[in-house]
Picture 1 (tube, rainbow, N blue to C red):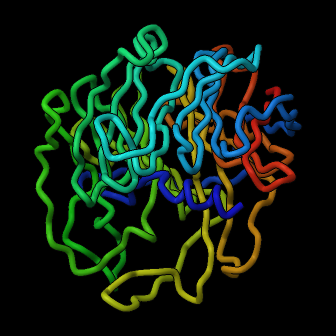
Picture 2 (picture 1 turned 90 degrees about the horizontal axis):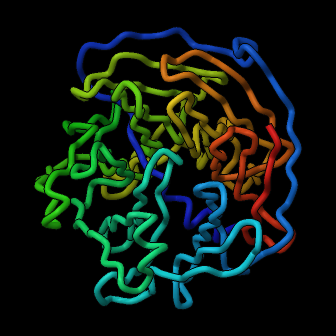
Length: 352
């Protein structure tokens, strides 16, 4: 459990931007057109006991994100055969090596994935087809990111978009910092983004998921600590906010060196992971609202399905806790990273 929390502290962020904004009222669980309870089925093999995060890509490839990188952080298996196909992302300080990384991939519509090194702040981009074909001969593209960017996603093939964790909406602890930032010059490995001084360190209270729509160029930012989704247009202007279903509203305090944290050591968890296609976006919702810091929050979770227009399509009630989701191309299954009896990760499949 500790391993999973440590790796997943990096799921990535945004709270909100200035600009012309259209507010939308809060929604409840009863506002979804459909509501379905689904049970998980553990997949019958555990390829690596060190694996904590599981992603099913292209319906047949299982990418396993390991914790310690002994010696690789990423392992690829055939989903149906269970046989190893390839290992990459070796631990180390050399070229194309990592000191700690997680995989970022949010749609089977994409041919690209990236690994984010949480220690060196480097993003390494891989073409999935080329990687599987060339393996060790494949040379990925890498870019050094500014220290204040956490989660990033593809804006287009040569440009990333990221969240500035110093942007934080609070009357008491507000920083003068932009939120969404375009990261240019992927090809030459430079970010082209300058750092800014900020009064408060807010990285520990302002994480979000970041998803670029393949149909209307909107950018969805799902708050990790609140039940709030902000939607931006391609000018990075906020156009809509979806709030719900639990009115999670954390309280904050400032500690040593102007570090902002949650008051009374409380825990909060809103939208934790997501996956999308051209029709829909699925967001994993954990719904932890201010429980004590020493209390286990691994309760069964929900997956909310939205249209790209923001319509509430379906609420899936899962029978267990998971911290990542991927969806197959025919939208028959949700795959999740659950927690096995040994405390390590376990791949679970839910029939929708």
